[in-house]
Image (cartoon, rainbow, N blue to C red; front, side, top):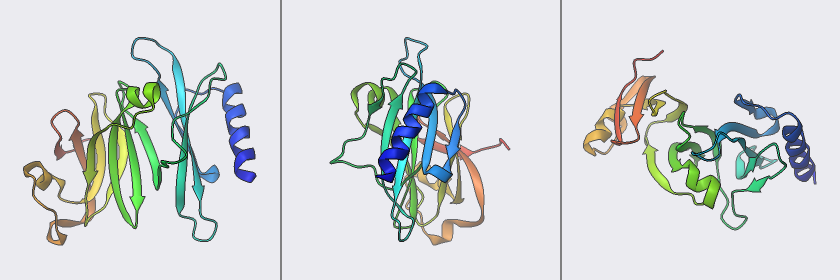
Length: 193
């Protein structure tokens, strides 16, 4: 019942105060990402992700993802029988073509990049790319202006450019930033700070 009330309050609040900046509402187990809904229009919308956590160990059990707008046309994008599990963050690309999801399952993080328009218009979760850094870690940071995904990892992701398997000897003592080019599916060292 608390989840339903929180969901209704959040949706109602966002209808009144539609925002255009990204907000992370971690206290409420929510993630909000502003997007352009259709490529041929300037209609702004929000993607609202509500995470439901296990009350005993505080791990995310599953997530509901909604598409919100000012006109009170809220659409549930996830299917009840096909839940999204372990979602901790999401970021839309600057051109609103892609949406990157940051997942953690059994202690291993990974990133999936999907077609944003297919997801919002047709409710299709089409994976364009997946970034696995096992046995290392990977973190989702942001998208650059030229549609490169900026990520952080404690393992040498450049080795993945030649399809090498990663192992413990490839790990670093610190996190390093990488660009991931969605078009070429290649990693390069990020020079941004």
